[in-house]
Image (cartoon, rainbow, N blue to C red; front, side, top):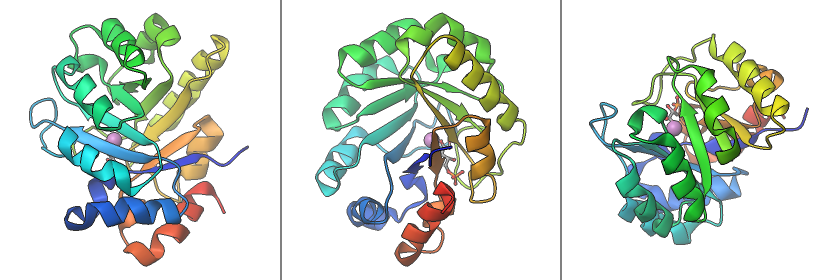
Length: 219
Ligand SMILES: O=C(CO)[C@H](O)[C@H](O)COP(=O)(O)O
Ligand SMILES: [Co+2]
């Protein structure tokens, strides 16, 4: 089993020092920077606009993995891509047309991700599997960091892994929400390739980031 990609969510970072925080993640061994975009409408929280992503871009060479919790999402794709997003992930419920949205993300030259909420069936994947470069399984309901991992997510990871393998898809399987060093290995054993973690990376301050990331990788 190879080590998972670790994608720290800057939702849990010090917003007063965001540039330094993303630079510190790179030195600490992170693989991607996960950016949670919330609109106060699709989810009950308001976070990071494209201008902030653009301002962060010169501070790290790590890919920006942008998780869009915005409805409607289509009007924002280009702005986040131009700001420096490498992956753009969308929720089917943020609509209105998932198939068109995923195609548009690829047209913009980004990797296209689809996000499955805890209450969203994995069946929707079958309809768009050829259009996705990443599947993000939410292991909490979206909107806030610091929530508890929903144990049933492990079975869902395994079911999505099976579907991706059966279809010959090389899409990355990512898990987001309540991921810690205690459940990371279970997520990987179930088939995850990439783990998002906010609280588990940032909670001890910058001197702990490298150890926290290593622990999530299983070292
Ligand atoms: O998408 C998210 C919430 O909607 C965040 O990425 C997620 O909650 C990460 O934070 P933590 O690791 O603290 O749970
Ligand atoms: Co997220």
